[in-house]
Image (tube, rainbow, N blue to C red; front, top):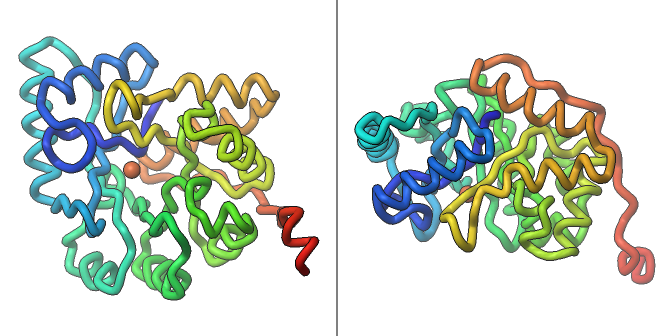
Amino acid sequence: MIDIHAHILPGADDGAQTLTESMELIMQAKKEGITDIIATSHADNPHYDVTKNVVLEKIELLNIEMKRNNLSINIHSGQEIRIGQSTIEKLKNGELLTLANSKYILIELPTGGIPAYSVQIIQDILKLGKVPIIAHPERNRAIAENPNRLLKLINHGALAQITAGSLAGHFGKTIQKQSLQLVDANLVHTYGSDVHNTKTRPFLFDSGLRYLEKYKRLDAVDIFLENNARIVENGEVIILEPKELEKPKWWKIFA
Ligand code: FE
């Protein structure tokens, strides 16, 4: 299994702080049956901006440490890119990392909302022959208020990645329930842990998949894992026709 979203690089951002912590995460990943991890440190985030070269250097460091400890897991390069005015310029200049050198890039919206320029950026990314994947839409407040805001971005050609912990209930019942709604509306295409540490933000990779299995969303499990594999292979991902979601009840009341 492949995890396409993880903060495992040592001392890069708010993920693993030391090489020891990175190694603990890798051991946890192995226990969960993960064979490949795309290291997606924060880039252009107001708090963290881990550059391409730093990501590549730290992956090298981790590879050496794994070899020393007789541990093996495939680490691929990537970044979780907060979109902004400089995203397109940086992408054109080759300053940003795609997921495992594929055409797919992991983008992050601010937690509070969807900036007005989001659609334009999505379109510009697509014009460059790259495919934007929106990280954890289920944790964005504007999407929580009205999930059809995500539908709009998907209709413009973006894809979305759901976080394992959201489905596992790590972020509460509301996010868990809404995550399932996004899955059912075909608004999610890929699956990632967004792991930061072993204690408060663990992988929960298996728990999230088990939740989907418990509620008989077996097709979703298959598609997510297949799409994750296709991203690493730079293949075409499976996309099901997205559906409009019923607006939340408060919307009906005030409409
Ligand atoms: Fe993240």
